[in-house]
Length: 155
Image (cartoon, rainbow, N blue to C red; front, top):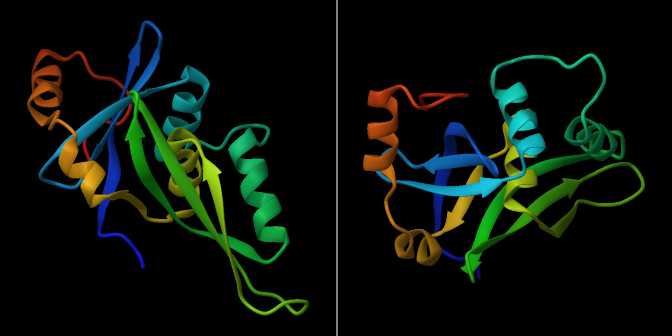
């Protein structure tokens, strides 16, 4: 049975001394987690509509999936444990060789976001996880007011 899910979108990316902070929001609440700066650049590149001179790793992965008749159906942040988020990437394939196949892969949430923004796939958080996380919207709004925010600044 599918868990109750909250649909979210990346609403802000913010460079930090150790990497990049990603804010995900549903229009009423936002959460934050920290990712590798290279993946932050990958996400921001896609969201800003920039086309890199050569394919980035996420572009390459997406091309491979598509060549084999697949698509990224959705990404789900499944749990939060010991300050680490865990996610699943859901792929679907249907081609002349096989019937419709759904594959679920263990993935880092940052990679899930980078892939989802490239192909328009929805991003979800399991409601139980979402409800247990602190709302970071006031922090994000204060950063916006003070001008301390970079990358995408609104959702």
